[in-house]
Amino acid sequence: MPSPERDTGRRSATMRDVATVAGVGIATVSRVVNGKPGVTTDLAERVTRAAELLGYRHDLTASSLRRADRRTNTIGLILEDAANPFSAALHRAVEDTAADRGLLVLAGSTDEDPVRERGLVKTFTARRVDGLVVVPTGRTDTELDAARRAGTPVVCVDRPTTAPGVDTVTVDNRTGIRAAVTALHAAGHRRIAFLGDLPTIWTAEERYAGFVEGLATTGCVLHAPLVRRGLHGTHAAEQAALDLLTLPQPPTALVSGQNLLTVGARRALQELRLQHRVALIGFDDLPLAELLEPGVSVIAQDHAAIGREAATLLCDRLDGEQGPARHRVLATRYLARGSGELPAVDDG
Image 1 (cartoon, helix red, strand yellow):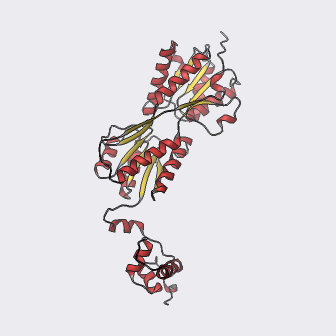
Image 2 (tube, one colour):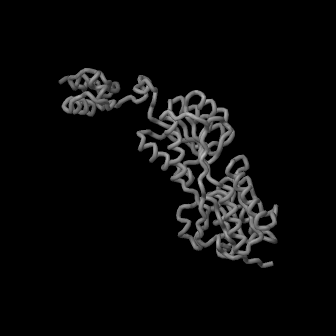
Image 3 (cartoon, helix red, strand yellow):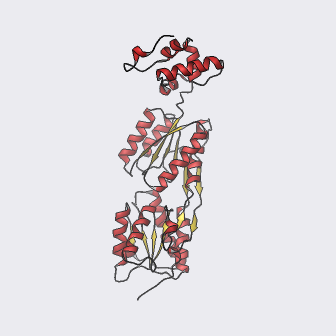
């Protein structure tokens, strides 16, 4: 058997090298590394041992270019922020569903920056991903449409898109926030404040609309000074909540439109030692929220269901399903843990 040592450190082993060391033809090596039938167990073991000895790494990109369907068995996942608990849970759900189909997930974060989103769309499509699951910023619809028309199926998750023919998975944001306002009203709250994310984000607009509708439904007055929007991140929410809670007529309850904003609001409450006096309900769950005192009441999304649904819709398209765009809207649920159930305390 020829020794492979002369090539060590000089170049990557090739399929021809593996064939030479194993004493078989290149076609046999190709069948083994691509998992195709027609090779005896003995030959397959010889090829496998030779590949391990040489440190051979199969070039999946080159193989995909030779396939008739041009599939790479990869999908691109474009998130808002991989560090956010919502994005992390969504990533895992998409990954689990994709793994069941033999697909690898490549992921990146936009941080709500449309330039970064465009770059990720271009990078993933250049790498010939089979499809895209995107949490869109709402400002790159033309790029998403171009990717779809070029043959890359796209599913938008958490937020819709104006790009035609794109499947979407969202949750019923308005109903969730309306339920929060109703619960606070039932506990006697009338001065209810709202902390919202960037107005350019579709979910932020939907949740604010639900807040306004909830106030109207319960007969509460919308106090403009108690509405703080355009907040992005924990620190901004903490500062906004501190401002609200130190007003001459502060709110007796806070509704937060996003999980990181909820963290900031809770920090402000604890800093002022008001966590047992001012009610708080946040949209989307938080890690360890139930371990605080009082626990943080939230309008919860089923991250796993959202991710599974998005991945399933994409896989359907990859399997050849045709037809108009499909839109799935999933329900939220209210988790009462204590902070949202505090009764109104108005010091006048």
